[in-house]
Amino acid sequence: MFDELDESLNQAINEAGFEKPTQVQLETLEPALDGEDLFVSAETGSGKTCAYLLPTFERLLPQTRLEIIALVLVPTRELAQQVLKQAKQLARFTDIKLGHIGGGTDIKKQQEWIQQPPQFLVATPGRLSGLLARDELDLSQVEVLILDEADRLLDMGFSDEIMAIADNCFNREQTQLYSASLAHKKLRGLADELLTEPKVIELNQISDKHESIREQIIFSDDKAHKYKQLVWLLQNEDYQHALVFCNSREQTEQLDRLMRQKEINSGILHGGRDQKQRNLAMSKLRRNQIKVIIATDIAARGLDVEGMDLVINFEMPRRGELYVHRIGRTGRAGQNGLAISLVIAPEFNLMAGIERYLKHKFERRKIVGLEGFYKGPKKQKASGKAVKKKKKKAKRRK
Image (cartoon, rainbow, N blue to C red; front, top):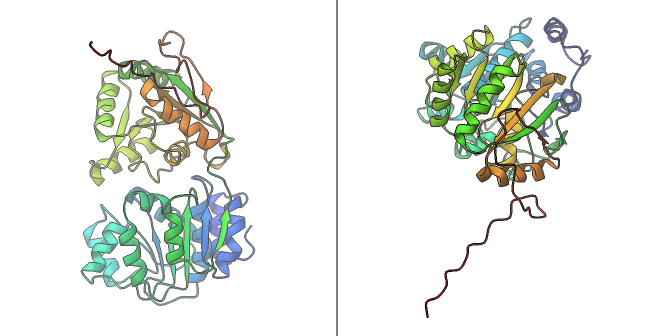
């Protein structure tokens, strides 16, 4: 399937059941193998992880020295684990040594990797920069630096850590940045700092419609009304796994209590949960002991679960990019998915702004028996946003 790659990698590809390369893999393989810097826009579920792993492993195959030669930075520990899982799958017929450093990493295992460094390391910036600050890790032999979901790395405030890590990779020969969008405000600046004459590959405009995902909105009167609609959807929609998004830890906890009351098996993911709790929730989901995960945006980053075919925005995301990342958890690898957003009046302008950002309208839907009084604003601006009511001026006393 990939004639340019070593037989051991093609054997792993075939055993993994990959039928043909995705667009991002086709576009990036040759320039990556040629050692070019890459600045790539690719949506979640497009196969971008495989796109950077394969040429990186091809580069590592002749190497025998036990030093960190390739480094991948990701925003969350869950995504680090996902990348490592796929790396193990693709490198299974090679002698490439793999490693992972992030929150929740076993300390003994981490010490082993420090003493005998892996050739390929995937890490979160926070944990890695801490090791560098204590002079416990040497990145001087890194040849390839990859930033996966670079937009989210910046959103999470890792810009200083990224630059410090890049400075320690002073012998690097290739840098690759992958993002859902190249339009991120700070991303261009980061690219200018890290990349040298990069090949820019913008496969998807983030505003393009996800053809495999049906996008719907349901209007709600208030939060109590949303609770009823959410329970109905989780009890009546046909789905294998569902992901419910909230904007805060507190809201995920409230929904978790509601799920228990309604006897809906669910788990929660947010930044306040420790690694053991997060791993347990994901393990239960993969073993089909639960069907529903309730999560915040950061905690759900990097989730890649087979059969995640329903995404519900209990609360509207604050930006278009976040919406795209959320619904990208479903409809992966060409499978069909459904994304439903529950919208109350104060969220209408957020929803309209996301529609404008995506350049398409969401399908309006009603749940029979749970219709509300709110059906959207009476008047809308040309932008699609609601016209705010003018406050009446108080009459002056004579």
